[in-house]
Image 1 (tube, rainbow, N blue to C red):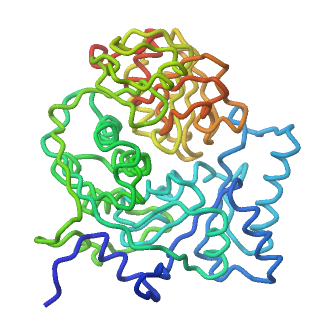
Image 2: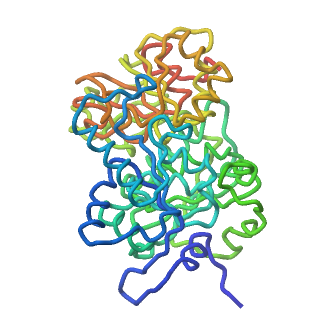
Image 3: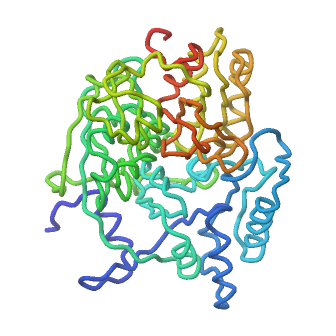
Length: 450
């Protein structure tokens, strides 16, 4: 009789091609996602070695990180950006890889289009040269980021060398109160575990609060697993998963094979933690990494690191609620899906903003759906900028960036020094908190506006 296994162990064991004690395993990869930033060197390596892409039909490309989001033609003046855009077009054409580039009806952020095209499926192994590949774990897929040299290896062999991570159960009990979202759950987890607390582990999110989340909310949680140091994040697939995938272009015709894809009763995790969702309130960050977070009603910790406070221009022991802001960014692979835009619009409707606000849909399909619902009009009427799909201010490689000293409430995933522009100060939050802060021109609690 087979011993009880976790969801991670089931996926891992079914994809190991070869393994030897003390060495990394050779892991087969079902889906390889690439974008313009981390793929050029990999293709150059293939050419140098005279290699082909082994399974081009299992690789899908998009353009997202460096393209401008200001207007549909995506006019680019920077020669270095032009070179990168030309490179991915040339590489995909030469090696037979599908590319969702500028003007494509499915172009968008890599971790948005994978799921919405139905490419992301339960039980898969998925990699991309991007740390937030963990997003796809929301579908019960083992998904993780890889380096540029590994991108080359996967292109050439459809495999990657990996050491087997340990398992980490995160149980979320209870139910969320109004105005509290999955972004607040994951920020609370990271604040408790710390940015390196889950290093060498794969999170599996379990419990009634997780089961009650929509697929898009689960994606938000899995997206930020990496911010706690986890290699990946997982949610077992269920009817919510299957209904969301149903009818998408590349989705399977039957989901029956995936109905048993879950952790067995009695399976042991290497670590476990429990969180009560009913006790959570909206979360915000006050420092320079995602682990420096707190409930919105609390004050900055008395023992907060001086270096982080100096960069942020804040003081220990003082509240952040009510602190003036300059910019709000609603977007990124964390919070740029239709439900995120709906949440922001629910706060902004009939109100005017007192800060610069960029609203950036995660993909062309998200943009079209939002416009069909009239969400773009809500944003424009409130005084926001309605942008084209892309990574935008999350990474600040595309013209969308903060000026030195500016404060930004951002729905993205990282608040590192300079992440959103040199000297920019980022406060991570949910779309609800971001929209409420835009209305007040200062860090605000959306619960009083709902």
